Length: 263
Image (tube, rainbow, N blue to C red; front, side, top):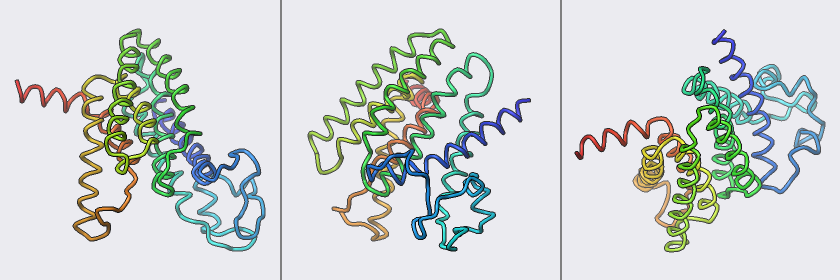
């Protein structure tokens, strides 16, 4: 039965990934995500329902439009596959046992939002308000549901504190060095602070710090390979999201190990 549940979560991830492809393309351009239906950008033919099955349709069509044979980017099935895999990974981490399972919707939502925001930031160096701001409301509702399930309302209080602390920290950084970071990063920081704070103080500390470590190592690597200069703008959103993932998964253990070492 558990295997079936994980399979269903994976299928849900594939479907969500298909929707995220629409979000990633349309939201930065200010377009509606519901209308018009998806169509081939070359010939304009609407995508048929049978050609819109996540992952499978791309393989069946061999990566080409059914009508004009124009190539379809491999990025579309890769986003679908990555989202499906990540959904299963989150389900494995959270599990289906009570009361932990109450947190599953909240972290599946964060996973979906992270995929969309990371790719949009890489493409356009923006973190759209249309995604980030409504996510505050959704995150609060889903984390409140998770808290109701676990019965520990201190988690929700800690989430609120994490939101304020991380938002304020990034705001100060942007105010002090506006060329290094944008206000979109500040708004994303508050959202990630909600999740990190809900998990624990260790997750909040490690997740916040990991973003700068990972982003810094990547930037130094690009400089050493001469793939970027000192003034090259590098999207920081993906590193914030990856750092938050590190904090959520391993933050409490890393923080406790650090305290044990220091004390």
